[in-house]
Length: 77
Ligand SMILES: [Zn+2]
Image (cartoon, rainbow, N blue to C red; front, top):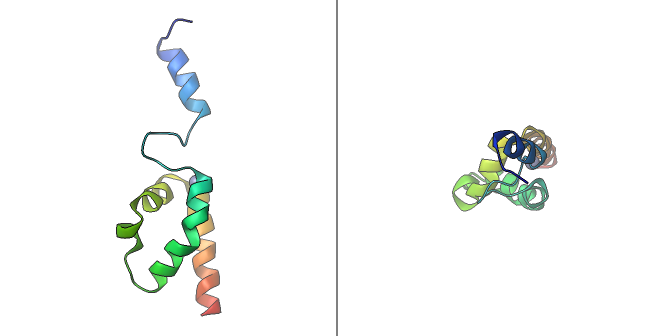
């Protein structure tokens, strides 16, 4: 198979969350509640978990999930 730009674009479009150093939605979701807890306690979670922060910036779905989680935790507190 010859690699040209079109082939690469097709491959990349199928794997939106696999840039090097980035985490996937599953990994993000696993640590999301910890991230939210730190946020609510004012502990700068973006410093402790920069990859989660980065994923939330890039992924609308997880950002919504995170917002919902934050709201739920605020109500519980
Ligand atoms: Zn995600």
